Image: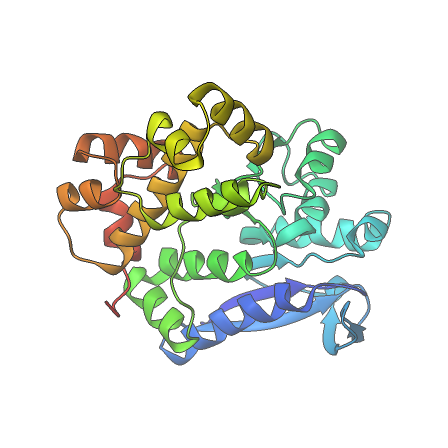
Length: 318
């Protein structure tokens, strides 16, 4: 029997939240994964996405029989959908019979409204994380990861992280080799781990107002193995160490040391994904020095060891 995947949509849903995972499961099915994707909504028929594209859905209330995966899309219209009891109760009912439940982006709000995130760790788009935490106090919200697995409930961040989530579900069902093959078939650059942050280092930091600091930021990201100590960076910026530290922190929101560590962690992650370098070499080329430091920093930023990350997510195209 194929694994039945139900994707819940509603008027104004984010099309990629549905289409991305649907194509992941559809491609996995072509590779022998055995999935059948169905789109459902409160009312059967035409459902417009937020961008105007219309999809045809079955009726959520008529869902019967075994469900493997229930996945709820997000979208700009989610706040208005929380009052739709037929939608929320339908999600709760089907979730009670599904093997696992998942959401993309702010679809997490619908899971929370249905009581499915109570006392669980969850994520959503970083812009909505504060509201999710304040509205549902019993949900442990973590705004940083791309996706989170807590028992049989999975949540993911914004839009394209739904593809990462779906690839992770395929990997859980059939192994990482099939997930990599699906990613290659869809020309997705890489299956990113859930613990990876929603933000690269430049995205996590504010763009400095000062042109010299913007150039310095680019220099740090391009030269992880260089001397990036505060004295060296201050000299490069033409400032005293004290003034540099204060201005850099004010204009980026991160201290120089914190920015450098995050940038080096990003560099190490890329090296693990696209090279076969030993861990000592990865540590040296990313500016982290030793394999021990690499391990410690990697665990802190992505909650996974460097070796495990490489085994699971290394690109075949090196």
